[in-house]
Length: 546
Image (cartoon, rainbow, N blue to C red):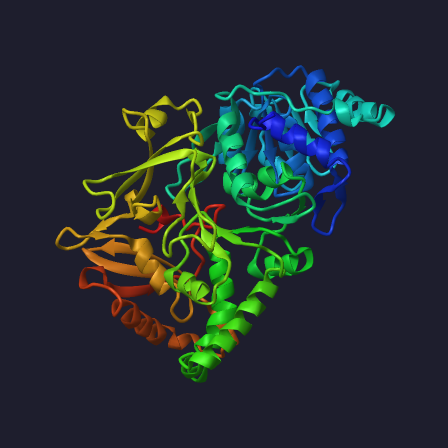
Protein backbone atom coordinates (compact mmCIF):
# COMPACT_ATOMS: atom_id res chain seq x y z
CA UNK A 1 0.00 0.00 0.00
CA UNK A 2 1.30 3.45 -0.94
CA UNK A 3 1.74 5.65 2.12
CA UNK A 4 0.91 9.22 1.10
CA UNK A 5 -1.41 10.82 3.68
CA UNK A 6 -0.57 12.29 7.09
CA UNK A 7 -2.58 9.61 8.87
CA UNK A 8 -0.82 6.79 6.98
CA UNK A 9 2.63 8.31 7.58
CA UNK A 10 2.15 8.57 11.35
CA UNK A 11 0.18 5.36 11.87
CA UNK A 12 2.95 3.49 10.08
CA UNK A 13 5.70 5.14 12.15
CA UNK A 14 4.08 4.66 15.56
CA UNK A 15 3.28 1.01 14.82
CA UNK A 16 6.85 0.26 13.69
CA UNK A 17 8.70 2.31 16.31
CA UNK A 18 6.47 1.80 19.37
CA UNK A 19 9.32 0.88 21.74
CA UNK A 20 11.96 3.29 20.40
CA UNK A 21 12.94 6.62 21.99
CA UNK A 22 10.90 9.45 20.44
CA UNK A 23 11.35 12.77 22.28
CA UNK A 24 13.83 14.07 24.85
CA UNK A 25 13.99 17.54 26.32
CA UNK A 26 17.67 18.51 26.50
CA UNK A 27 18.82 17.65 30.05
CA UNK A 28 15.28 16.37 30.66
CA UNK A 29 13.02 13.32 30.46
CA UNK A 30 12.93 10.84 27.55
CA UNK A 31 9.65 9.63 26.01
CA UNK A 32 9.30 6.49 23.91
CA UNK A 33 6.91 6.49 20.93
CA UNK A 34 4.41 4.54 23.05
CA UNK A 35 4.68 7.17 25.84
CA UNK A 36 3.92 9.92 23.31
CA UNK A 37 0.96 7.86 22.06
CA UNK A 38 -0.49 7.64 25.59
CA UNK A 39 -0.30 11.44 26.04
CA UNK A 40 -1.89 11.95 22.61
CA UNK A 41 -4.79 9.61 23.43
CA UNK A 42 -5.25 11.26 26.85
CA UNK A 43 -5.48 14.66 25.16
CA UNK A 44 -7.93 13.23 22.59
CA UNK A 45 -10.20 12.18 25.44
CA UNK A 46 -9.87 15.64 27.04
CA UNK A 47 -10.82 17.30 23.72
CA UNK A 48 -13.84 14.99 23.45
CA UNK A 49 -14.96 15.70 27.02
CA UNK A 50 -14.51 19.43 26.33
CA UNK A 51 -16.92 19.23 23.40
CA UNK A 52 -14.43 19.99 20.61
CA UNK A 53 -15.48 19.08 17.07
CA UNK A 54 -13.48 18.34 13.92
CA UNK A 55 -11.97 21.57 12.60
CA UNK A 56 -11.93 23.37 15.97
CA UNK A 57 -8.71 25.25 16.81
CA UNK A 58 -6.09 24.53 19.48
CA UNK A 59 -3.23 26.99 20.13
CA UNK A 60 0.22 26.17 21.51
CA UNK A 61 2.55 28.81 22.95
CA UNK A 62 6.02 27.83 24.08
CA UNK A 63 9.60 27.11 23.11
CA UNK A 64 10.55 23.76 21.60
CA UNK A 65 9.81 20.83 23.88
CA UNK A 66 8.60 17.23 23.88
CA UNK A 67 5.19 18.35 25.12
CA UNK A 68 4.96 21.06 22.43
CA UNK A 69 5.49 18.38 19.78
CA UNK A 70 3.03 16.03 21.47
CA UNK A 71 0.30 18.70 21.56
CA UNK A 72 0.84 19.37 17.86
CA UNK A 73 0.46 15.66 17.01
CA UNK A 74 -2.55 15.34 19.35
CA UNK A 75 -4.38 18.02 17.37
CA UNK A 76 -3.64 16.83 13.82
CA UNK A 77 -4.32 13.21 14.82
CA UNK A 78 -7.77 14.20 16.16
CA UNK A 79 -8.88 16.26 13.15
CA UNK A 80 -8.34 19.55 14.98
CA UNK A 81 -6.55 22.60 13.55
CA UNK A 82 -3.34 23.52 15.37
CA UNK A 83 -2.31 27.18 15.80
CA UNK A 84 1.37 27.49 16.79
CA UNK A 85 2.24 30.87 18.35
CA UNK A 86 5.83 32.08 18.25
CA UNK A 87 7.09 32.74 21.79
CA UNK A 88 8.73 35.96 20.54
CA UNK A 89 5.40 37.56 19.60
CA UNK A 90 4.42 40.45 21.86
CA UNK A 91 1.26 40.39 24.00
CA UNK A 92 -0.87 42.21 21.41
CA UNK A 93 0.12 39.88 18.57
CA UNK A 94 -0.35 36.83 20.78
CA UNK A 95 -3.89 37.86 21.75
CA UNK A 96 -4.70 38.85 18.17
CA UNK A 97 -3.73 35.33 17.02
CA UNK A 98 -5.73 33.61 19.78
CA UNK A 99 -8.84 35.65 18.97
CA UNK A 100 -8.45 35.79 15.18
CA UNK A 101 -7.98 32.01 14.96
CA UNK A 102 -10.89 31.32 17.31
CA UNK A 103 -8.79 28.88 19.36
CA UNK A 104 -10.77 27.07 22.07
CA UNK A 105 -7.91 25.57 24.11
CA UNK A 106 -4.42 27.01 24.57
CA UNK A 107 -1.43 25.05 25.86
CA UNK A 108 1.18 27.51 27.13
CA UNK A 109 4.55 27.48 28.84
CA UNK A 110 4.37 28.77 32.41
CA UNK A 111 6.72 31.66 31.57
CA UNK A 112 4.58 32.78 28.60
CA UNK A 113 0.96 31.90 29.34
CA UNK A 114 0.18 35.20 31.08
CA UNK A 115 0.59 36.94 27.72
CA UNK A 116 -2.92 35.65 27.04
CA UNK A 117 -5.78 37.89 28.14
CA UNK A 118 -8.09 35.02 29.05
CA UNK A 119 -11.09 37.12 30.06
CA UNK A 120 -11.16 39.03 26.76
CA UNK A 121 -10.80 36.00 24.50
CA UNK A 122 -14.17 35.10 23.05
CA UNK A 123 -13.80 31.45 22.01
CA UNK A 124 -11.02 30.44 24.40
CA UNK A 125 -12.36 28.03 27.04
CA UNK A 126 -9.26 26.65 28.70
CA UNK A 127 -5.59 27.41 29.45
CA UNK A 128 -3.38 24.40 30.17
CA UNK A 129 0.26 24.44 31.29
CA UNK A 130 2.51 22.84 28.69
CA UNK A 131 5.09 21.55 31.15
CA UNK A 132 2.84 19.11 33.07
CA UNK A 133 -0.62 19.35 31.41
CA UNK A 134 -2.13 20.84 34.57
CA UNK A 135 -5.05 23.26 34.39
CA UNK A 136 -4.30 27.00 34.68
CA UNK A 137 -7.65 28.66 33.91
CA UNK A 138 -11.01 27.49 32.57
CA UNK A 139 -14.43 28.97 31.93
CA UNK A 140 -16.03 25.59 32.65
CA UNK A 141 -15.57 24.70 36.34
CA UNK A 142 -15.59 21.00 35.41
CA UNK A 143 -12.60 21.32 33.04
CA UNK A 144 -10.12 20.36 35.75
CA UNK A 145 -11.98 17.08 36.37
CA UNK A 146 -12.22 16.38 32.64
CA UNK A 147 -8.46 16.87 32.23
CA UNK A 148 -7.67 14.68 35.24
CA UNK A 149 -10.11 11.98 34.12
CA UNK A 150 -8.62 11.91 30.61
CA UNK A 151 -5.11 11.22 31.90
CA UNK A 152 -6.30 8.83 34.61
CA UNK A 153 -8.20 6.73 32.06
CA UNK A 154 -5.04 5.59 30.29
CA UNK A 155 -3.28 4.92 33.57
CA UNK A 156 -6.06 2.49 34.47
CA UNK A 157 -6.54 1.19 30.89
CA UNK A 158 -3.11 0.79 29.26
CA UNK A 159 -3.02 1.76 25.59
CA UNK A 160 -2.78 -1.12 23.10
CA UNK A 161 -0.55 -0.43 20.10
CA UNK A 162 -3.13 -1.55 17.55
CA UNK A 163 -5.76 0.84 18.94
CA UNK A 164 -3.62 3.94 18.31
CA UNK A 165 -4.52 5.71 15.06
CA UNK A 166 -4.44 9.17 13.50
CA UNK A 167 -7.63 10.57 11.93
CA UNK A 168 -7.68 10.94 8.15
CA UNK A 169 -7.90 14.43 6.64
CA UNK A 170 -9.22 15.50 3.26
CA UNK A 171 -6.35 16.62 1.02
CA UNK A 172 -7.67 20.20 0.86
CA UNK A 173 -8.59 20.47 4.54
CA UNK A 174 -6.67 23.01 6.62
CA UNK A 175 -4.82 21.45 9.54
CA UNK A 176 -2.41 24.26 10.53
CA UNK A 177 -2.76 28.04 10.73
CA UNK A 178 0.77 29.46 10.81
CA UNK A 179 0.91 33.14 11.72
CA UNK A 180 4.00 34.65 10.14
CA UNK A 181 6.23 37.38 11.51
CA UNK A 182 7.95 38.74 8.45
CA UNK A 183 10.55 41.45 7.93
CA UNK A 184 7.68 43.74 6.91
CA UNK A 185 6.09 43.43 10.35
CA UNK A 186 2.64 42.35 9.15
CA UNK A 187 1.14 39.20 10.66
CA UNK A 188 -1.07 36.90 8.54
CA UNK A 189 -2.44 33.41 9.22
CA UNK A 190 -1.25 30.99 6.54
CA UNK A 191 -3.74 28.13 6.00
CA UNK A 192 -1.70 24.97 5.46
CA UNK A 193 -3.68 21.99 4.11
CA UNK A 194 -3.04 18.28 4.67
CA UNK A 195 -1.60 17.84 1.16
CA UNK A 196 1.11 20.46 1.84
CA UNK A 197 2.37 18.80 5.04
CA UNK A 198 2.21 15.31 3.52
CA UNK A 199 3.92 16.45 0.31
CA UNK A 200 6.80 18.12 2.18
CA UNK A 201 7.27 15.05 4.40
CA UNK A 202 7.22 12.57 1.50
CA UNK A 203 9.74 14.66 -0.46
CA UNK A 204 12.05 14.72 2.59
CA UNK A 205 11.70 10.95 3.05
CA UNK A 206 12.68 10.44 -0.60
CA UNK A 207 15.73 12.73 -0.46
CA UNK A 208 17.13 12.68 3.09
CA UNK A 209 18.51 9.33 4.29
CA UNK A 210 17.28 9.08 7.88
CA UNK A 211 16.24 5.83 9.57
CA UNK A 212 14.63 4.71 12.87
CA UNK A 213 16.73 5.65 15.89
CA UNK A 214 18.67 8.41 14.11
CA UNK A 215 19.07 11.55 16.19
CA UNK A 216 17.88 15.09 15.46
CA UNK A 217 18.31 18.30 17.47
CA UNK A 218 15.25 20.57 17.30
CA UNK A 219 16.41 24.15 17.93
CA UNK A 220 14.76 26.20 15.16
CA UNK A 221 11.41 27.61 16.37
CA UNK A 222 8.77 24.87 15.99
CA UNK A 223 6.12 27.54 15.54
CA UNK A 224 7.77 28.29 12.20
CA UNK A 225 7.25 25.71 9.44
CA UNK A 226 10.93 25.22 8.50
CA UNK A 227 11.89 23.85 11.91
CA UNK A 228 8.49 22.21 12.36
CA UNK A 229 8.69 20.18 9.15
CA UNK A 230 12.32 19.15 8.97
CA UNK A 231 13.37 18.91 12.62
CA UNK A 232 10.09 17.37 13.80
CA UNK A 233 7.25 16.24 11.53
CA UNK A 234 9.44 14.52 8.94
CA UNK A 235 11.84 12.75 11.37
CA UNK A 236 8.89 11.44 13.45
CA UNK A 237 7.51 9.63 10.38
CA UNK A 238 10.79 7.66 10.23
CA UNK A 239 11.07 6.81 13.94
CA UNK A 240 13.89 9.23 14.72
CA UNK A 241 14.83 10.34 18.23
CA UNK A 242 14.42 14.12 18.63
CA UNK A 243 16.16 16.18 21.31
CA UNK A 244 14.42 19.51 21.91
CA UNK A 245 16.46 22.55 22.85
CA UNK A 246 14.22 24.93 24.80
CA UNK A 247 16.89 27.55 25.48
CA UNK A 248 17.46 30.48 23.13
CA UNK A 249 20.01 28.89 20.79
CA UNK A 250 23.29 30.82 20.75
CA UNK A 251 26.03 29.25 18.57
CA UNK A 252 27.90 28.23 21.76
CA UNK A 253 24.86 26.38 23.20
CA UNK A 254 24.02 24.77 19.85
CA UNK A 255 27.54 23.43 19.29
CA UNK A 256 27.58 22.07 22.88
CA UNK A 257 24.32 20.20 22.24
CA UNK A 258 25.49 18.95 18.82
CA UNK A 259 28.66 17.61 20.45
CA UNK A 260 26.61 15.63 23.00
CA UNK A 261 23.69 14.44 20.84
CA UNK A 262 25.67 13.92 17.59
CA UNK A 263 22.70 14.45 15.22
CA UNK A 264 22.44 12.68 11.85
CA UNK A 265 20.91 15.67 10.02
CA UNK A 266 21.26 19.35 10.90
CA UNK A 267 18.93 22.18 9.93
CA UNK A 268 20.08 25.74 10.48
CA UNK A 269 19.72 29.37 9.49
CA UNK A 270 22.68 31.29 7.99
CA UNK A 271 23.21 33.40 11.11
CA UNK A 272 24.35 30.41 13.20
CA UNK A 273 26.69 28.98 10.53
CA UNK A 274 28.16 32.37 9.62
CA UNK A 275 28.89 33.15 13.28
CA UNK A 276 30.69 29.82 13.69
CA UNK A 277 32.66 30.53 10.49
CA UNK A 278 33.61 34.03 11.64
CA UNK A 279 34.62 32.98 15.14
CA UNK A 280 36.26 29.59 14.54
CA UNK A 281 37.58 29.60 10.97
CA UNK A 282 38.19 33.17 9.79
CA UNK A 283 40.68 34.04 12.60
CA UNK A 284 42.76 31.00 11.55
CA UNK A 285 42.78 31.46 7.76
CA UNK A 286 43.19 35.27 7.93
CA UNK A 287 46.57 35.07 9.70
CA UNK A 288 49.32 36.41 7.38
CA UNK A 289 51.37 33.20 7.61
CA UNK A 290 48.28 31.06 6.97
CA UNK A 291 47.39 33.09 3.86
CA UNK A 292 50.80 32.24 2.41
CA UNK A 293 50.64 28.57 3.42
CA UNK A 294 47.15 28.18 1.88
CA UNK A 295 48.64 29.07 -1.51
CA UNK A 296 51.07 26.12 -1.38
CA UNK A 297 49.21 23.12 -2.92
CA UNK A 298 50.44 20.27 -0.67
CA UNK A 299 50.35 22.17 2.61
CA UNK A 300 47.08 23.84 1.67
CA UNK A 301 45.30 20.49 1.19
CA UNK A 302 46.62 19.21 4.54
CA UNK A 303 45.53 22.30 6.49
CA UNK A 304 42.10 22.45 4.85
CA UNK A 305 41.59 18.77 5.66
CA UNK A 306 42.31 19.50 9.34
CA UNK A 307 39.95 22.49 9.34
CA UNK A 308 37.20 20.34 7.80
CA UNK A 309 37.73 17.58 10.40
CA UNK A 310 37.55 20.10 13.24
CA UNK A 311 34.41 21.66 11.79
CA UNK A 312 32.70 18.28 11.40
CA UNK A 313 33.57 17.53 15.02
CA UNK A 314 32.02 20.89 16.05
CA UNK A 315 28.67 19.69 14.66
CA UNK A 316 28.80 16.30 16.37
CA UNK A 317 30.76 14.26 13.83
CA UNK A 318 28.13 11.99 12.24
CA UNK A 319 25.70 14.18 10.27
CA UNK A 320 25.31 13.49 6.54
CA UNK A 321 24.38 17.09 5.72
CA UNK A 322 23.65 20.59 7.04
CA UNK A 323 20.69 22.25 5.30
CA UNK A 324 20.51 26.04 5.41
CA UNK A 325 17.14 27.76 5.04
CA UNK A 326 15.38 31.00 5.89
CA UNK A 327 17.88 33.25 4.05
CA UNK A 328 20.83 32.93 1.65
CA UNK A 329 24.25 31.88 2.94
CA UNK A 330 27.03 34.43 2.50
CA UNK A 331 29.03 33.90 -0.72
CA UNK A 332 32.37 33.89 1.12
CA UNK A 333 31.18 31.27 3.59
CA UNK A 334 29.66 29.09 0.86
CA UNK A 335 32.82 29.26 -1.27
CA UNK A 336 35.02 28.26 1.66
CA UNK A 337 32.78 25.29 2.55
CA UNK A 338 32.82 24.25 -1.10
CA UNK A 339 36.62 24.47 -1.11
CA UNK A 340 36.93 22.04 1.79
CA UNK A 341 34.14 19.79 0.41
CA UNK A 342 32.01 20.31 3.52
CA UNK A 343 28.51 18.72 3.45
CA UNK A 344 26.37 21.86 3.51
CA UNK A 345 23.57 22.92 1.17
CA UNK A 346 21.03 25.72 0.83
CA UNK A 347 17.29 25.22 0.38
CA UNK A 348 14.54 27.72 -0.33
CA UNK A 349 10.98 27.94 0.83
CA UNK A 350 8.36 29.99 2.60
CA UNK A 351 5.59 29.47 5.14
CA UNK A 352 3.05 29.68 2.30
CA UNK A 353 4.58 26.51 0.80
CA UNK A 354 4.76 24.60 4.05
CA UNK A 355 7.75 25.41 3.39
CA UNK A 356 9.67 23.73 0.55
CA UNK A 357 10.20 25.19 -2.94
CA UNK A 358 13.74 24.08 -3.82
CA UNK A 359 16.51 21.87 -2.41
CA UNK A 360 19.37 19.70 -3.63
CA UNK A 361 21.84 17.49 -1.77
CA UNK A 362 25.19 19.10 -0.92
CA UNK A 363 27.17 17.03 -3.43
CA UNK A 364 24.76 17.67 -6.32
CA UNK A 365 23.76 21.31 -5.89
CA UNK A 366 24.91 24.28 -7.97
CA UNK A 367 27.12 26.86 -6.20
CA UNK A 368 25.30 30.08 -5.21
CA UNK A 369 21.91 28.49 -5.95
CA UNK A 370 19.06 27.89 -3.51
CA UNK A 371 18.72 24.32 -4.72
CA UNK A 372 16.64 22.67 -7.41
CA UNK A 373 12.88 23.00 -7.73
CA UNK A 374 11.27 20.11 -5.82
CA UNK A 375 9.34 17.61 -7.93
CA UNK A 376 5.94 18.48 -6.46
CA UNK A 377 6.15 22.11 -7.52
CA UNK A 378 6.27 24.29 -10.63
CA UNK A 379 8.14 27.60 -10.92
CA UNK A 380 8.21 30.55 -13.29
CA UNK A 381 10.15 33.81 -13.28
CA UNK A 382 8.13 36.93 -14.05
CA UNK A 383 10.58 38.43 -16.57
CA UNK A 384 11.13 38.47 -20.33
CA UNK A 385 14.06 36.02 -19.99
CA UNK A 386 13.88 33.85 -16.82
CA UNK A 387 17.43 32.50 -17.42
CA UNK A 388 19.11 35.93 -17.57
CA UNK A 389 16.75 38.67 -16.42
CA UNK A 390 15.79 38.89 -12.76
CA UNK A 391 12.07 38.73 -12.00
CA UNK A 392 9.69 37.67 -9.25
CA UNK A 393 9.73 33.94 -8.45
CA UNK A 394 6.21 32.50 -8.74
CA UNK A 395 5.22 28.93 -7.84
CA UNK A 396 2.31 26.51 -7.78
CA UNK A 397 1.87 22.87 -6.76
CA UNK A 398 1.13 20.44 -3.93
CA UNK A 399 2.99 22.44 -1.28
CA UNK A 400 1.12 25.74 -1.74
CA UNK A 401 -1.19 27.09 0.98
CA UNK A 402 -4.97 27.51 0.71
CA UNK A 403 -4.67 31.24 1.43
CA UNK A 404 -4.66 33.57 4.44
CA UNK A 405 -7.16 32.86 7.20
CA UNK A 406 -10.09 35.32 7.20
CA UNK A 407 -8.16 37.59 4.83
CA UNK A 408 -9.52 37.33 1.29
CA UNK A 409 -7.89 40.62 0.24
CA UNK A 410 -4.36 39.44 1.14
CA UNK A 411 -5.04 36.04 -0.45
CA UNK A 412 -6.17 37.64 -3.70
CA UNK A 413 -3.12 39.95 -3.77
CA UNK A 414 -0.72 37.01 -3.24
CA UNK A 415 -1.98 34.90 -6.16
CA UNK A 416 -1.87 35.82 -9.85
CA UNK A 417 -5.07 35.65 -11.87
CA UNK A 418 -3.96 32.31 -13.33
CA UNK A 419 -3.28 30.78 -9.90
CA UNK A 420 0.46 31.18 -9.25
CA UNK A 421 1.71 32.16 -5.77
CA UNK A 422 3.75 35.37 -5.83
CA UNK A 423 6.71 34.75 -3.49
CA UNK A 424 7.94 38.36 -3.38
CA UNK A 425 11.47 37.02 -3.99
CA UNK A 426 13.51 38.04 -7.03
CA UNK A 427 15.69 35.64 -8.95
CA UNK A 428 16.51 33.67 -12.07
CA UNK A 429 16.45 29.97 -12.94
CA UNK A 430 18.75 27.79 -15.05
CA UNK A 431 17.90 25.06 -17.56
CA UNK A 432 18.15 22.38 -14.82
CA UNK A 433 15.63 24.17 -12.55
CA UNK A 434 18.21 25.49 -10.08
CA UNK A 435 16.90 28.72 -8.53
CA UNK A 436 19.20 31.69 -7.90
CA UNK A 437 17.77 34.29 -5.52
CA UNK A 438 18.84 37.93 -5.75
CA UNK A 439 16.74 39.47 -2.98
CA UNK A 440 13.28 40.51 -1.88
CA UNK A 441 11.20 42.56 -4.31
CA UNK A 442 10.25 45.05 -1.60
CA UNK A 443 13.94 45.52 -0.62
CA UNK A 444 15.23 46.24 -4.14
CA UNK A 445 16.68 49.72 -4.66
CA UNK A 446 17.18 51.64 -7.91
CA UNK A 447 20.64 52.91 -8.86
CA UNK A 448 21.27 56.41 -10.31
CA UNK A 449 20.69 55.19 -13.86
CA UNK A 450 17.86 52.83 -13.04
CA UNK A 451 20.04 49.80 -12.19
CA UNK A 452 18.56 47.21 -9.83
CA UNK A 453 20.43 47.05 -6.52
CA UNK A 454 19.91 44.11 -4.16
CA UNK A 455 21.00 45.27 -0.67
CA UNK A 456 21.23 41.68 0.60
CA UNK A 457 24.17 41.02 -1.76
CA UNK A 458 26.09 44.06 -0.45
CA UNK A 459 25.28 43.14 3.16
CA UNK A 460 26.64 39.61 2.63
CA UNK A 461 30.02 41.06 1.60
CA UNK A 462 30.12 43.64 4.40
CA UNK A 463 29.12 41.05 7.04
CA UNK A 464 32.33 39.13 6.30
CA UNK A 465 34.67 42.05 6.97
CA UNK A 466 36.42 42.79 10.26
CA UNK A 467 34.32 43.28 13.39
CA UNK A 468 30.94 43.54 11.65
CA UNK A 469 28.35 41.61 13.65
CA UNK A 470 25.27 42.71 11.65
CA UNK A 471 24.44 45.24 8.96
CA UNK A 472 21.62 46.75 6.90
CA UNK A 473 22.16 48.63 3.64
CA UNK A 474 19.62 51.35 2.92
CA UNK A 475 19.26 54.41 0.71
CA UNK A 476 19.47 58.05 1.81
CA UNK A 477 19.49 61.04 -0.55
CA UNK A 478 20.17 58.69 -3.49
CA UNK A 479 23.26 57.26 -1.75
CA UNK A 480 23.78 53.82 -0.21
CA UNK A 481 24.40 53.88 3.54
CA UNK A 482 25.35 50.84 5.63
CA UNK A 483 24.11 50.63 9.23
CA UNK A 484 26.53 48.44 11.19
CA UNK A 485 26.33 46.88 14.63
CA UNK A 486 29.99 46.14 15.51
CA UNK A 487 31.13 42.82 16.95
CA UNK A 488 31.99 44.16 20.39
CA UNK A 489 32.72 40.67 21.69
CA UNK A 490 35.43 40.12 19.05
CA UNK A 491 36.84 43.62 19.56
CA UNK A 492 37.23 42.92 23.27
CA UNK A 493 38.78 39.49 22.67
CA UNK A 494 41.34 41.06 20.31
CA UNK A 495 42.04 43.95 22.70
CA UNK A 496 40.96 46.52 20.10
CA UNK A 497 39.99 49.91 21.51
CA UNK A 498 36.50 51.07 20.52
CA UNK A 499 37.98 54.38 19.38
CA UNK A 500 39.53 52.46 16.46
CA UNK A 501 36.13 51.27 15.14
CA UNK A 502 35.55 54.18 12.69
CA UNK A 503 38.94 53.57 11.02
CA UNK A 504 38.28 49.81 10.83
CA UNK A 505 34.88 50.42 9.24
CA UNK A 506 36.43 52.82 6.71
CA UNK A 507 38.81 50.03 5.66
CA UNK A 508 35.87 47.61 5.48
CA UNK A 509 34.02 50.04 3.22
CA UNK A 510 37.00 50.31 0.86
CA UNK A 511 37.36 46.51 0.74
CA UNK A 512 33.67 45.95 -0.06
CA UNK A 513 33.51 48.78 -2.61
CA UNK A 514 36.48 47.32 -4.47
CA UNK A 515 34.32 44.24 -5.17
CA UNK A 516 31.27 46.20 -6.39
CA UNK A 517 30.28 48.21 -9.46
CA UNK A 518 30.19 51.97 -8.85
CA UNK A 519 26.40 52.19 -8.60
CA UNK A 520 26.38 49.59 -5.76
CA UNK A 521 29.15 51.15 -3.68
CA UNK A 522 28.56 52.25 -0.09
CA UNK A 523 28.90 55.99 0.51
CA UNK A 524 29.20 55.75 4.29
CA UNK A 525 28.92 53.45 7.31
CA UNK A 526 26.86 54.47 10.34
CA UNK A 527 27.39 52.63 13.62
CA UNK A 528 24.49 51.45 15.78
CA UNK A 529 24.84 50.52 19.44
CA UNK A 530 22.29 47.71 19.68
CA UNK A 531 21.62 44.53 17.73
CA UNK A 532 18.99 44.89 15.02
CA UNK A 533 15.52 43.65 15.90
CA UNK A 534 14.86 40.27 14.28
CA UNK A 535 12.11 37.87 13.35
CA UNK A 536 12.07 34.41 15.00
CA UNK A 537 13.92 33.13 11.89
CA UNK A 538 16.69 35.57 12.83
CA UNK A 539 16.12 37.79 9.80
CA UNK A 540 16.51 41.50 10.52
CA UNK A 541 13.23 43.46 10.53
CA UNK A 542 14.41 45.76 7.76
CA UNK A 543 11.32 47.96 7.75
CA UNK A 544 12.42 49.44 11.08
CA UNK A 545 15.74 50.69 9.68
CA UNK A 546 14.99 52.01 6.20
